[in-house]
Amino acid sequence: MAFDAVDERSASARGRAPSKPDPRRGGLRSALEMGLIGMDVAGRRGSVSPRRVLPILIVTLIVALGVASLRIELLRLRYALAESTLEEQRLLDVERTLTAARRKLRDPVHLAQLAAEQGFVAPDSQATLAEMPAHGTASVLAAIGPDASQRSDQP
Image (cartoon, rainbow, N blue to C red; front, side):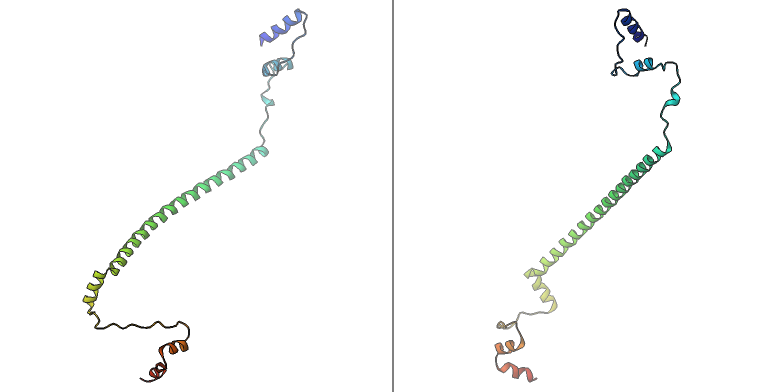
């Protein structure tokens, strides 16, 4: 502050014009030049009006509610994922149990034991059936032979 005044006096004493204010130095030089030293400038500060603050507060509130709802949705999805993972593990256990039961039922040794327990016996003879056409009853009767229609009428 005092140095600027001394600079200006020494510059004028040497016959030079006082230097122009340097915008890079800040507000000290400009405050001296404007004659604001000793004046109360506290009232000059830009007061914040509610008309400017209210929209900012509303936008902030909306953004905060949006973030909160996203976090709640994220938590809900995490719980649903954990529940689905547990359900998947349970279903995999059921699948393993059913696969083991199916393999046991297809095992010839186990089938023979079940048949013996239920009273099944080995057949005395085997019957082989000819393949029948799949379309219509007339073609089925024709494939069996002419005597088939007579046999189906008799008890």
